[in-house]
Image (cartoon, rainbow, N blue to C red):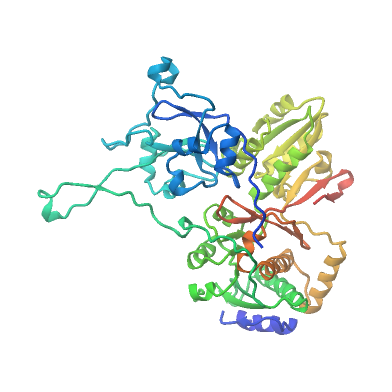
Length: 558
């Protein structure tokens, strides 16, 4: 059966009267966040020493100045660009030392106060003065190309400026010097080479929609009497339609029907992105929300066509887009969200005398997951030891475990054999163990008795309680509509439709930002809450917390 006919059939079966179909396929309260005085100091090219402060969300110049015991004018003097560009999250600013006269090396006479100048780039011309460069602290998700694109400076030039060999990997939390001025020879017409003198060309950074100021939240919530939504799914590549795609779609339609019965009106436009015709920018921009498509390639294509929030529905490989695109929303709970919640969970459980151990397979120690866990633990201010598993790793682990107190072991569960081995090793230990791991741990077919033996605390993307009354009711309705058993994709479509269409109906076009930090919504299989990466994209910040207990039972704690 062709997908267009199947769409009509499904909509007819569910009798959705509140939706139209395209088968052609008040401001949040503001409170400044606390400011912690940095422990890191840098020396500028003028010989003065400053604190290197990373600006966090909702910090102000006043709150930063107050914390460091200096004036706002002192900070402006150290960072002249702030008067023009303003204070931005995740940037690094220089803060003068309190009560310091900032004497130069000539007056202090100490060897440690010698002037420090950046490594010279290949060009014979270098920036001069007191504002030669600023510091960029490398995030775990960035590579040199990302940083080069952000500042509009070739990667090779940044590497040369910092004296870093080409091809060398830039580690997390590395401090890179980014030159403020670049001197580039302006192009000269061929006919006037001898007559005209070369002049400096102004530095022009590549523009993108994310360089533009974000639209401020309106004072009041503006809503329409209906939601305009686009659903992009790969349905018609051949006569054989993906079962998971149609299960997702079926669950989505069931939720839409129920929302309609509750008075939520939705004009849903369905597009088959496996066909030859991809929806145009005009069609996409006519919506309040775009849900789908599935593959990273199609998601990127969609993002290039619209500024409307685009919700990724299944493929976690799209998660890195949340660090780049303001209108990207990672619908499922991605790995980053799981790791962040695990670190938060450890911090909540931690008592004096406990020990934290990060356990990772030696073969993946430089993986994104390992870097994320390391970064999040550090950012949370938690002290921890690391065991890198390899042959004979059990001995290394035992040497770290304490006989008294609780050993809280965070497991990087990317590799199945590693997850199995370390779970068995921890289970055999006489030490008190509480293990923490992401969803992958429970998908590795490890005996529930072993997971219960290590008190596994799991931050899960999905968990379905078949004994729940709402789950039973959904299954019965699904059988009645489709004469089939719902798969996990049917539950996913149902949950996502309920959450996101409700958000748009409640908050209007600015729904994504207005939903930030609100209490989680509990679906049948997944929970949802809006988190944000700096001032870029959004992600689901509500993993389900599961605790594996003795006897193979699983307790849902959140």
